[in-house]
Image 1 (cartoon, rainbow, N blue to C red):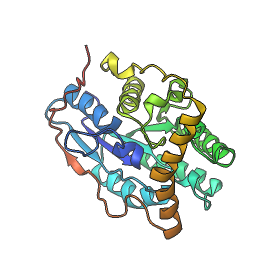
Image 2 (image 1 turned 135 degrees about the vertical axis):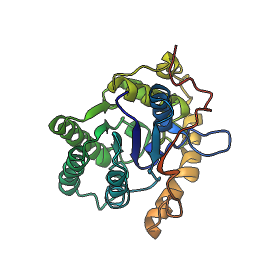
Image 3 (image 1 turned 30 degrees about the vertical axis):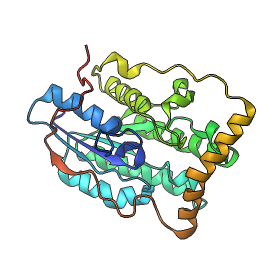
Length: 264
């Protein structure tokens, strides 16, 4: 087996929001990928997940990348920048340059690296005119960086399946359990491994919502999700300020998850 250690680096996307274990903690695509790698590698496999929700690209680079490099893993997944494109301080030139530098450091240390072009979430969120070009710029930079450094690219943006709202949670920003399973399947495919075919199955699109019901849902979403997000931005706070990584060091993965990691 090629990979006996895996470190996941990033923000809420990699932490696993909103794919909950029975105890309320979050699983997500990275845990699912780790279960498949562990099933293949055996008891020597080690996994760490350093991702914390709300982290911006500079936070990830300063806090998580040095820790990941110190662990000297065989495989690293790196997904950052999604929170940055939502902020008025977004500096595309700085982020693109630093993205390439960070991936170069990870590759130079001998690790295989997985990168992501982010799925299109803006169809369900306000600010599309401002944010969508930033996402396109970031995705283009990720693709170019992956090619330049020989990283594995998982192109979620090219998959129109993610336009299905059933792959997203009620906050319209984070993946649902079905969305996380699909991402895990695509990561494993990029690594040349298989998974349970059900991971790639997509729930049917919901029936069209009547106009009044849709506007009521929008207002409810704004009160439950948008308003708290705006308040955090105004007060300089983050949803992950008091949190630590869920798997801060490389450790064995106990395969107790009911989802079949090997498939078939």
